[in-house]
Image 1 (cartoon, rainbow, N blue to C red):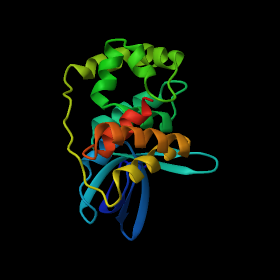
Image 2: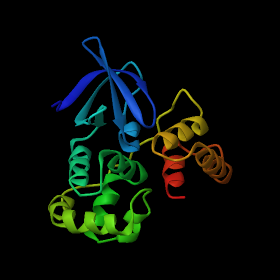
Image 3: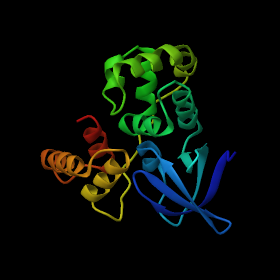
Image 4: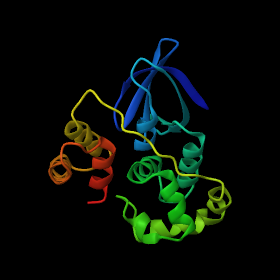
Length: 198
């Protein structure tokens, strides 16, 4: 229904962004990859979107890059992978790493993502390998920089993990452990990715 939304970024967190356009603020769920690519609050941004219509909710998912949206759509075409699981996958590892795992039939790597079991990982590989193989040869991994935030890395990471389905006490314990291990110089993206693998 919505191909993309272009407007002013009024708020962003590791799990969602709010874009205002024509006086309407759109709450858009995003991956860590998209979060890393977003500009600062107050800047004009464009997100390629997918609208999920459920009985009790309409959810917008946004992507900074059309290729990430394409991979998201391919992932949710697999039985057992819903939009929220696909966003967790795209937040746990980069789109390039997901494509690489599918092409190389790396079940173990896909299983490392929270909520992905052996059967689902095998189904993703079986159903997407040929599609991804065509695109994979022309795709290059992108390096994304860290984006400063208005909240502490710890608070932001815990909030994001709770939204992604981790119990708050588990999220707090894991995040505190990672920050202690890595030191204060660790990025939100890195903390969340590591916590999703615990």
